[in-house]
Length: 121
Image (cartoon, rainbow, N blue to C red; front, side, top):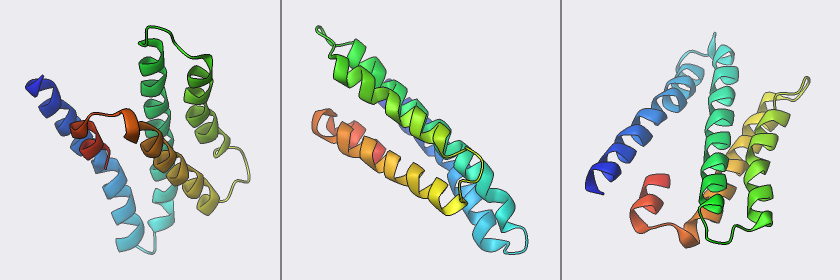
């Protein structure tokens, strides 16, 4: 299990590179920073969908899967997709993605093992 935790941490830290890189480009290069909002939002949508999929897997792994948990686990992907509809302002797009990531953290928190809580933070 230790190797799995180490790999999970390594992948999570590597997964921060697109977030940090895009945000840094936005902040440090004001002239071209706006070009990095869309890749930042796209990556956020991918991660939000991925975490929703992880919830789907956890729900299906239960001895008696709950229909409600399966339905709710699909909402992150739908919310992420909706932010990419035409005319959605970047601030709203990033706000919805941030709220979605926070909501999944809150949903995961009570049932997650301690090491996974730390990883998610």
